[in-house]
Image (cartoon, rainbow, N blue to C red; front, top):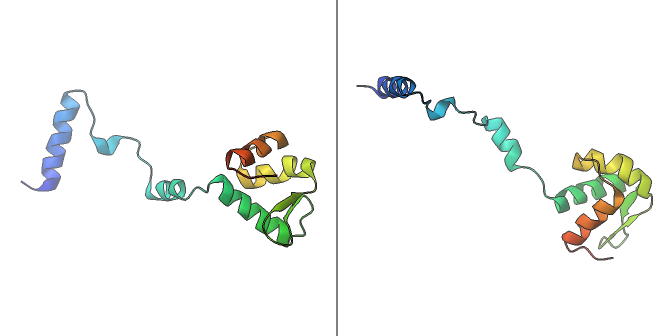
Length: 107
C-alpha cells in the first residue's frame, strides 16, 4: 500500500468518525510563516525609523551627532505620522515613551 493511499484511508476513517486530518487545519503558508518570523522588535523598528528619518532630514526625530542617543524635536509629528508608519499602530506619545522605558532606554 502506498503512502498516498494509506493517507487517504486514514482521512476517510477520520471523516467517518467526525474528525478531520491535520492537513485540513488552517495552517499558515510558508510565506505567512516567514513574515511572522521576521517581525521586528521595538528596538529594531525604532532603529529603522531613526536611520530613515535622520537620512531624510530628521524634522521630528533623529540620531544625536554622536550616535549614542536620539532627539525628538516634534512630538506631534512623531505621534501622528511616524509611529503609525513605522510601528503599524497608532499610539500616543506618552505610550511611546513608556515603551522606551520598558526597553530600558534612559533620558
